Image: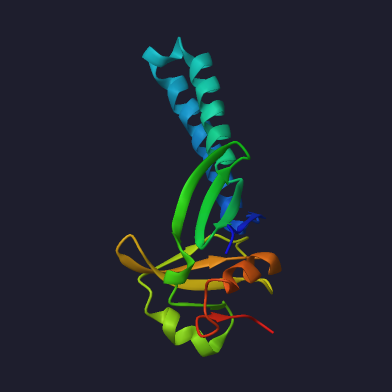
Length: 171
């Protein structure tokens, strides 16, 4: 069997919680500048504080612009988070054959199996869609439920490794 490589990019949708975070960051930056304007030692450097607060607010808000990249290579799934289309960080790496179960997130038949997870990680768009799947695996010492949104090509690649008993595709 030759090496199989599939890749997919999923953009995280903005939620109301993201909007609250953005507003909070702007308010915190404004409060910082306001407080610093009343401190006599900092008044001489107020212009620098304003630029620093603006830059910090921009940097924090850009961290809320997320994309997830799924890379399936010969039985191994790697998930990276990409911040503001410029910085990448690996958030998951594991063998697909080690998944205990993989099913659609709305599939009530497998809800009991996912109930035993100690952690839940959402590496999808943030909204339930027809291709929102969850899998249960042991990751970093704990049973973790991970939510992803694989396309049909990625699901077919998973089928090469997972048995029909473990992979439950939505019909």
